[in-house]
Amino acid sequence: VRYEIEKKVIAGELTVAEIPAEWKRLYKEYLGVDVRNDREGCLQDSHWSGGSVGYFPSYALGSAYGPQMLAKMEEELQAKLEAELTAKLEAEEQRKARIQENAEKTVVEARNLCAKGDIDTAEKMLADLLAEMPDFRSAQYLMQEIQDVKAWEKEKAEKERAEKAAREKAEAEARAKAEAREKERLKAELRAKTEAKVRAEMEAERKAKQEA
Image (cartoon, rainbow, N blue to C red; front, side, top):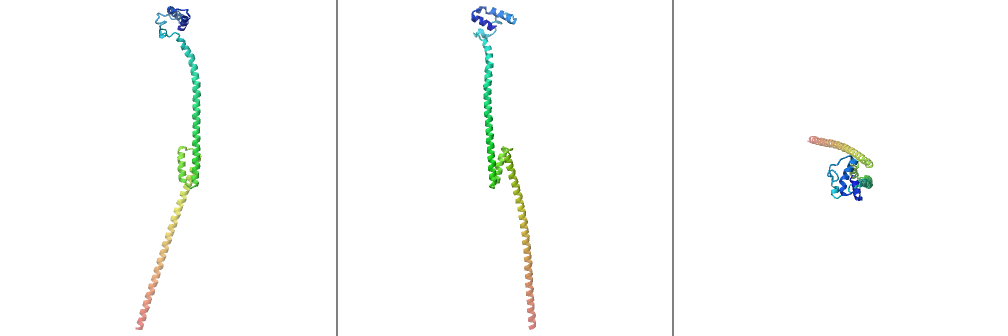
């Protein structure tokens, strides 16, 4: 209704004084509503009284522009989001690749340390790596190898200690027996010397008596 009246006024087909009557006519014609006064009619809002002539068509234009702007914004935003997501995914893949490469280098370094005999340092390196990447297979395999070697070395060391202890015990027992035999020999030798001396003294005493 407002748009129809504005077009007529601007075209010179309707004067300002005729606006109230035209408003009532069009309201009745278009909407079937009887307008009781101008406050409920042409002055019902602040557009005309505020000097905003031709304002209502801007709503229609806004309704037309809005979806187009929104569609363009969504298109540009979608492209931007896709580009950002792609960049993030690529950065993440690069980060994972660097981590994988560094992890593989760590395993190689740990294996070289094992070859040099520095198993403890290699084990610590692998433990740190597996704390960050628990599913890294090559590190798991090398760690298992190290643990198997250390278990074998421990078993070997314990066996060697047991064999040494047994050997030392046998040697101690042999020394004790040898010392006991030596003591018996010395005792026997002392007895023999003592008996010989006693016999010699008795023989000397017997001869002395005979001579007397």
